[in-house]
Image 1 (cartoon, one colour):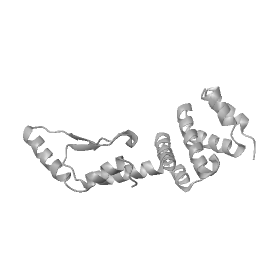
Image 2: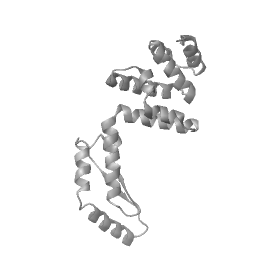
Image 3: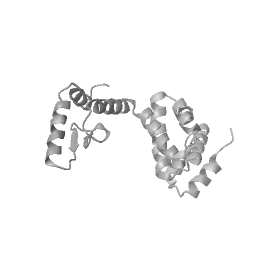
Image 4: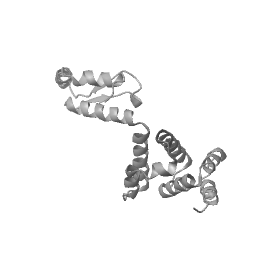
Length: 179
C-alpha cells in the first residue's frame, strides 16, 4: 500500500485542520489513514465533520475489534457511498449510518418510539416530542389549533389515543427498557 502521509498532510493543509487532528490522523495505521482520506476526499469533509466521523469510526472499530478501514467496508456504508447523492445528502447519510452503527440500542429505541408515536394516530396539529438522544424521562405533546373548539377536540382525541398501551411502552423505553 502506498504511504498516504503526504496526501493526508495536503488534505489537512488545504482545509486548515488543526495540528492535533492531523497528528491523530497520521497516527493511524496506513490502511486506516488511506480509508479516512478516501472518505474525507469523497465527501469533501471539513474538520468538524471529519472529527465526528473519525470519532464514530474509532468507537465502532473498538467495539468490533477492527480498524477504521474494515468499518468503512461495512455493507451499510458502502451502499450509502455508492449512491448518487449530492455532497450534503451523502454526508448526512453517512453520519446517519455511523450513528446507527455506533449506537445500535439508541437508534433501535428511537425507531420503536417513532413507530409507537405513529400508532397513536394523533390528530392533525398534534405532535409528540422525545428528549434529545432519549436522555430524559419526559414526553411532550404539542397541540396547535385555530379555535377553542378545535383545541378541545384535539385534546379529547389525544386523551383517547393515550388510553392504549403504546404510551406505557414509550415511557418504559425512556426508562431503559430494550426495544
